[in-house]
Image (cartoon, rainbow, N blue to C red; front, side, top):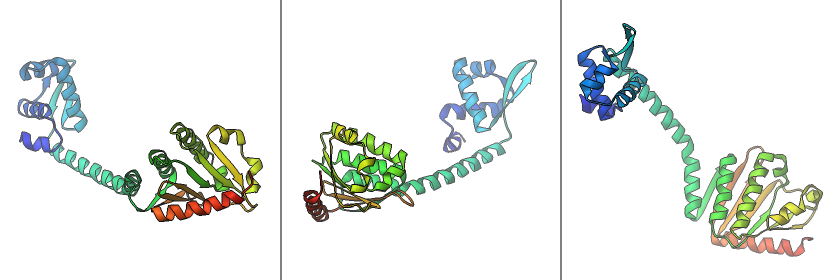
Length: 248
């Protein structure tokens, strides 16, 4: 029976206490402590745990609290509760798996395509830039980020971390957003800027190491990371041509 109880999540001590109460009926904590040869503090801890599981009940006898095992059907109720909890856990894990797989793929720097959605995905992508050991990050930013303060704050924090790792950045913005940018902040974060054209960029491109990231902020924040040396090299060549023709 104790093995069955342990399969229900009882630790060995809880199993012993439960079986003792099942056989003995109502007992005070002092009596249980003596009979089980367990310190009073440990006895209260085990009894509290069993009460939380819903398998023992507490009563009052002559103003002294007593403890007794509930009807054994309470064990089935505990099992059903655990099964419901497992279903919720499985659903939550299933929902998180795509993000976890994306983080794993970025961390291992495997060639391929990874989609990372939401602010958590954005943070994971920025962390991968820092962890990649890239010598430089090249960015064609979207003006859309200015409309999302929480995302912009995450980016600014990441830029400080990037600078601390000795990874400089270069970015090409459209002329139309020049007056909206705090040049001193970018310089402080080791971020060189140039400007080209007047049409704002609805999407964003970042190049680092063998990876290229395509980011959109509207209608939802989504990052698509392509890890491929040839694609990254091609995008780097195109960036350098734009950089050469952009205004400082």
